Image (cartoon, rainbow, N blue to C red; front, side):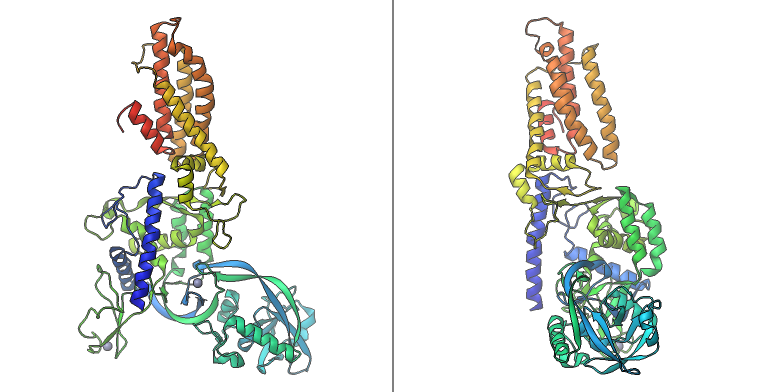
Length: 611
Ligand SMILES: [Zn+2]
Ligand SMILES: [Zn+2]
């Protein structure tokens, strides 16, 4: 079954990957090579055997450096994906939920107290009741004992600043675990957690009568039970900031599982320094990375319980449990292959069991620069160049792709792995909403390419705004507007091409000098902007130059001199006009080339020859 699953995943991924490659190709992106393969500069897949061998080699090296350890600790768990996930993969969504006011009894005084909660199914794991030290309503309860309803369990009542007097009744029950705050609170207070939810997302024996139910079912059942016994005072509909899995959207649970961790907390200062060494385009994106680094509180859990991912290259001795690492350089599937040793180096046993867990996908993706540069590979250029010049990427993966790449490459090479980071915002739908499957407003890039062609889409994207600073709305009307500029460029070129090319005259007419001077100014600006990966400013200025300065003014003024059909101008004056028309076109094509590579290449090669 596992083999079938892997085959299916591989097929789906291959189709999706090839579709992306196709879109890139049609967009006119200039990669080093369009060949798929393991060579330097060729298109690679992060699930290829070669790539996975490198991912595993980095694990082996980091293990040997003592930077990886295994620990059982409470962490984010996605019941949908069935695996532990890192903080970087958790997003927060405002979800409607019920805030339930539940009656507890105070053991010493017999009085009723009311506590509000969105997670009544966790009552069985309630460890302490808190009120704010400044909250006069509850000062008399300090040191007393509350009895948890239905479970008849005794828990202490204490003052603690974490309780918000404005929220609910001002009393809060701390359970293991409703959210990350609870996890940290238990850790700091040294409280023993009672885990009520198992790794299959079902309630376990600690939850008593809820045993075997899913979290949602358990919530309904316990509310029913509380109602029946008159213990539910009221319910309020609230919006609750819920941690959910970025990948599957399931609400996160907090479960203790044994996972491998890569050390990162002790490198926070180093990472902040790297963040400051990088050139960010736009500069304000740096802060997103810095804020993320500052927020890191635990090491990176790198093991996952999934079917399709790079296997953790480990075997264990069946009799003594010793972990066996293979030699780096090959791709290993421990669940599918014999151990790389004959007998256990510790106890001599000859029986082994392969590791079933796999890596976090970012453990693969975080070494793309090392793969690109051929780090530790014969024929690689890593030793010569040490780093990639540029990382272009989306802002939503700064805390994952960018951060993890910097971290892992730093741990392996001791340095920053890029010079420049170019961070793009997103193209949203026409109304400004993020495109998503659930909203049904996704516009596929292929659709745009089919409808408008690549060049109008590229020009539109450059003219519309600076995507390193803001989202764009996808407007078909504006994309077809961009197509008009391309038609204009084509028509201008066609007009100029009716004249025979000529050599530059000794002296240019004043008007011709003027247009070249205008264009020179534009060249300076474009050089400066392109050097900063800014395509917006040159695109806007070029478009204006083409339509207004050049076509509407200069061409209109110079037309008669270029034709010279009545012989009113000298031959030198006519030549000055024709030579300048061609020169302006040539320079405009060069300036447009980064944005309109195909049309500018086509016109250039026909009229001027060469590449
Ligand atoms: Zn998930
Ligand atoms: Zn052994």
